[in-house]
Length: 118
Image (cartoon, rainbow, N blue to C red; front, side):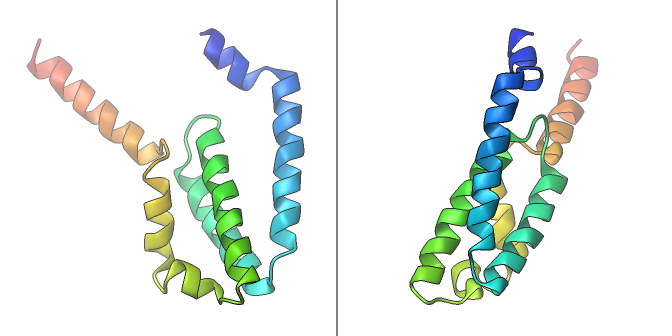
C-alpha cells in the first residue's frame, strides 16, 4: 500500500516528474515537424494503452525521443525510423509496458482459474 501512496500522493515526486516531462516535451518541439506529428500520434496511442500511473509509458516515450533525435540528426525521415506501419512499431514499444490489455488478460485468467480450480 505504501508503494501506492508513494506513486500517487508523493507531491515532491510528482513535481519532479512534471519538470522532467516538460523538458522532454521541449525536446520534441525541437524536432522537425514530421517527427513531432508522429511522436504526438504515438503518444496518444500509448496513453490509450497505459495503466496505473503510466510511468513505464513515460520511460518508453523518453526513449522514443532519443531515437527520433538521433534520426533527425542523421537527416533521416521519421518513417525511416519507424517503418510505414507506425502502429506496429508503437505496439512493439509497448510490449515492455504494463497495459490495460495485459491487466484485462490477467483478470480474465485469474477469474477462470479461481472458479475452475476451487
